[in-house]
Length: 257
Image (tube, rainbow, N blue to C red; front, side, top):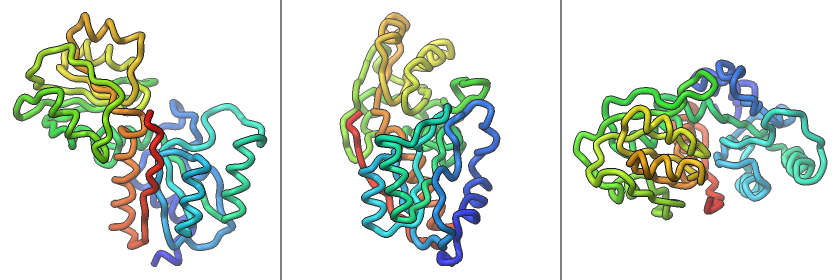
């Protein structure tokens, strides 16, 4: 079956469960196929977080025909095909690798998304959408069935036991609720404060919200932009393997950030 999978068919497949077109008004990161191949059928899918040369080289080494990433090459305005962008695109074309990128639709997905998986890892119950972004809520919040400490929460979401960028125990020691917004979403700590949760989990911290969290007695974990956004990519990878019967592989290229 995998030999018959073209990039067009895979595009239809991804759009069948990821709300790619539905985010077009608020997500300008060119979700979907960013660099196509020559029409050859795809026999292996690679998955990674970032559209970087290191990721591309790994994809080529394992003979992947398509690379699915969370952070693609294009974000809004047209770019000149020079420097790193030209080198990356040329590498993809030379190795006939299709680049497929999904940003906010992957953050928001209620089961396979970064935030939904983080909420599941934490063990939250009564989960509901959280964190408005251009009119869409892409995060999730919920309650713990049993109170946890911030140290226990860190262990639940640490990818490959990598330490978080920052842990800010500004609130109560017994945490009964949490809100999750992966990546660079420190500003959403203000939404967490407004909604009265005990813990806010994101990827990166921010100087601008430090005192807001301290004075508002909100616990916060900055798990790392990369380490909070491996989860959706891996969840989609597992889903593809099960639904399509195609060989898949995750490419781990951590930034430490």
